[in-house]
Length: 295
Image (cartoon, rainbow, N blue to C red; front, side, top):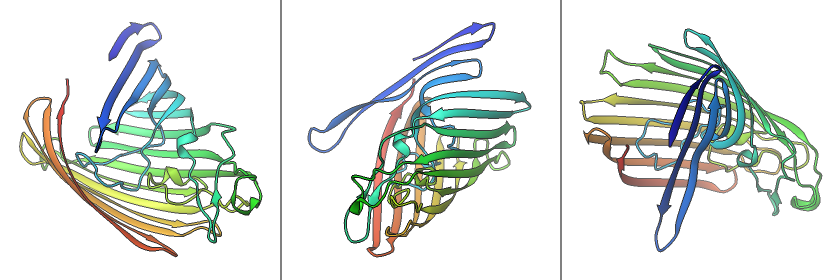
């Protein structure tokens, strides 16, 4: 549902998208994907985080690549300056950005609840050549002292993350083709550098995890109906004391065919390797196919 009305303060828009899925056996689910209201530069509701920059070229994305890609409840204001420049400030629900984990020797590190939303800011430009964005966030790290491993503290910390990315259009190859590059750095805000979620934001005693991720990808419109995509990422996390350091790389590629406008069929294959400091390597190899009708 996408309803729009022109007003003297700008377009008033209400948007809702939902989907259902099922897996092996009788497991099924229903998800409110997006639901928000926009009025001029003001946005309120559930939609993609303003911190996110680019979330992949692959048709399905069967393995997680390491970047920020989260849908959250939020209130945001975007100011458009002309010539494609814009700035956004937002308060976002942090619950999906709280990463927890296990401590060496047993026990876990949990959050003590949500005291404050994450504060997100972004600067962007979108023009004929492509687009670029710089993002930043402040994220409160609030450990649960009673539930944490060994009951060892509950010191609050202020985590943060920054990121930057660029998408460059390649009309000299074919219309619709492009490449992207992006990178993120986080301290006590690991969910802003990766959706992997394998390392806690802190050890519950005032020491936070730090890390970075780098990613790149390309989409080539091979013919008027066939598209080829490839993207990959690298993640490196220096975990807080007592937690496992992690390094990870992932690559995902796909081919898609659109024989009729709005109807796409595609196949996707991906591989990822995750190396934990004290556990060793874990490999993923996945394949998927999808048929999609958009109307």
